[in-house]
Image 1 (cartoon, rainbow, N blue to C red):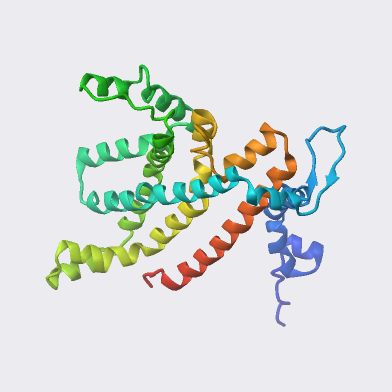
Image 2 (spheres, rainbow, N blue to C red):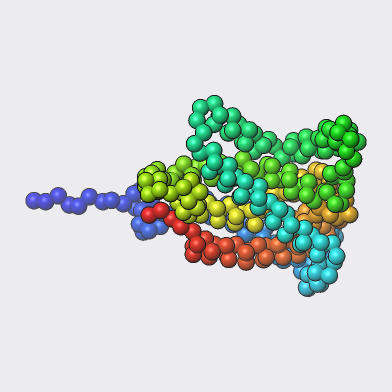
Length: 308
């Protein structure tokens, strides 16, 4: 006589009766978190973008339709913020993608104490809190008694208002944001570069490939998923990463030269208490970056080279 087949159902399967329900129960906490903290606020912001309200509990909301969007698109400061957002993204590319990629490739062969020294120097900015980093840079770049301008004065050069002059403020904030990101990007590139199969490199050397040919034809194609990932992160989050430094160092000035879409929507919401304008600016940013994200994901699927 044969024994009856043993049941492979878990206690949750026996409780709910359907084996395919269990994976969804495991996902339930994550899904609930996303709904409560991401999608519900997003829907509420979309709703508020059609109203005029100052966030006071005693004040009533006034429905204005698409007026918030129409007014935002004709505001000079909104146009300046969108333009600055693009400049932030373009300016961050060298420090978030190109320089870390070069550092990761050309330091791959370092050994011993030199490797530890390089890792320490490149990763230190990443572990410093953004507000602390902003305060340190404000002290270093102060026009009157900052260390950098004191060095310029000692060399007989003119002092520069890095954070006070509109011609330098935006580039200064891009530099500070990029300085903070170099370590993170280098970490990802170094991990991806170390994961390349050494047999590919040895085979290329045996075939007479030069170091540059190895980089161009072996390393860069195999690093393309990481390159595209960091490029996508820079485009989607680069201007957002600058928010702390704008808020602490310049508050969008001087003369709105450093503001971007993320600081502007925060300023509308918590500076002037114009919740409708803030929500509308947030929806514009969400729609624009959402479309860009879809395009970049499609590009990653088409252009990334994976070692199978």
